[in-house]
Image (tube, rainbow, N blue to C red; front, side, top):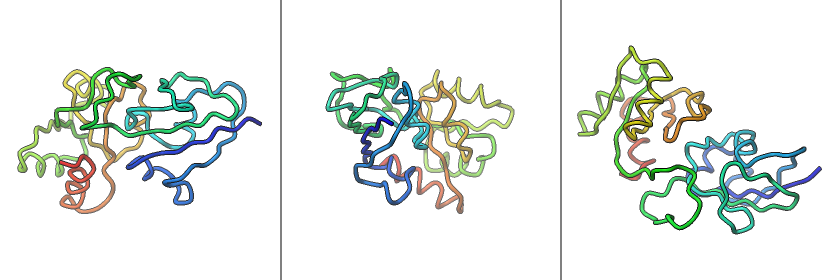
Length: 177
């Protein structure tokens, strides 16, 4: 069975088991597998990724893995200019605006008090939230990992359990605001 070596950087390591964080590890695969498929298998949301290097060359999500490939996977870059390499999203994440899942109204209120632009409307469906997120370049705030599996999601943060204060603190730290 062919194998590829993966290495994930910075906050992407939070999605991995502890024994795979911040180091190279091999993954076996069968048949033709794309980078996106393998990322999904490994539990890494594509919406969190800005750059994938295969053997030192920038590739897209559709790149088909080959035996012995070495993949370096990087999170969204906020301050590093990577415009001359293959971008995985058309527009870089620059403006900090949010749309909150309809069950995160407490977080939305707290973030508004801190001066952030946050939409939270319980009448919006998941599809409408994704559409608004893409049209207005808003980061989806959710506590449901299923949002990360929608193909059209370009930017999202899964807010873990905890107090509203701790959840807001996580968002601010995650984005290094």
